[in-house]
Image (cartoon, rainbow, N blue to C red):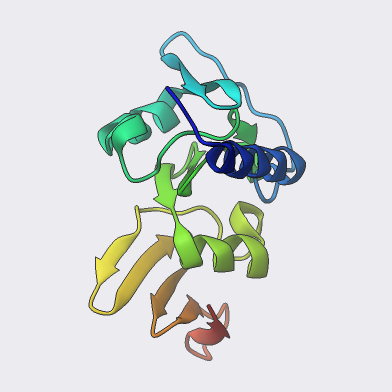
Length: 172
């Protein structure tokens, strides 16, 4: 497989960012192997990357290296509350024992990780893959929803009191 220098530079930069930041909410360790897990080592411009378990199953279900996520840019990392995540060129797959493995991408991922603390934040883990809706996308999380339309992320976190849902809007 041949890559241009530009491509190598972008992949190397992505790997460096992933290695520095890891998965948001990285607060603990979780076992990465069990008797029932499968593991794949995937060749990337940066070397071999391991993808495994339910994250691997989800990755394969959307086309693997030929799918919309592209290549993994780093090995699986621990995430908040005993979860795991793998970062890909075009998104991430987050897994927890309570929610399973789900894809988070694009501006929804940016808002979730950077503005709301990712898996360790108030929204928790994704509970479904991102869905295309008229004019944008929608992702459901354990404790709320992010909808992205019109270049804006709209976050809904149900209020803990009887005040009704809390809705916040941020620039995309």
